[in-house]
Length: 184
Image (cartoon, rainbow, N blue to C red; front, side, top):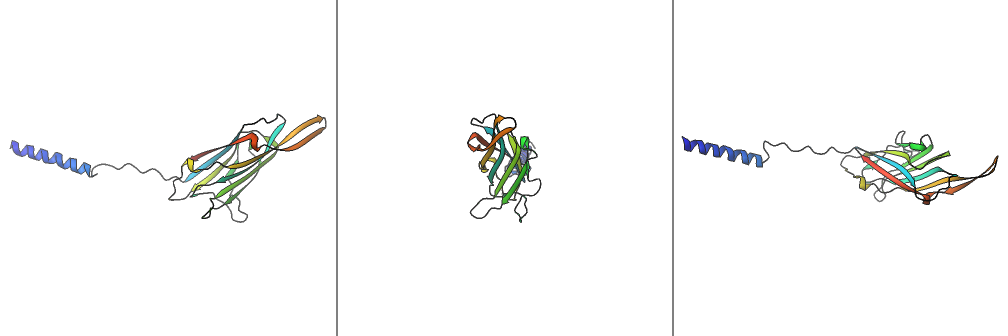
């Protein structure tokens, strides 16, 4: 009897070991959820000497989107849908136009944003872009390239009341663009 018990026990342990090694009885880890959206936050910081009498009055930003990333838009004119691109931060409520150009086989999709405000605003966050990620694509934050941008401003020279000379200024070299991407 004792001999049979040891043989049965050994056989049982060997069977469990083999079944576990084959994956039977274990649970596979869940696969990561497929990302469906990305939010791009745009902001600037001052890198040069902007005079205290200078206001930032406009940004012209072009964002190249990675493969599989799109935004909702109309085709005629090719503007982004409402809620896709929003002016935020000190630029909230500014006049804005956003145009989407879909990707081709040779050129990535692009979003071009023009934001202007006659009263001016400060450096910092100024826009958010809500993107969609197509099925089968898994972009990472490093797949999003640094946007190209130009910034303009107004320099106010106070010559005495009521005279105020205002000059258009290119602020592109005085500001740096910061892009933060959140993938969900």
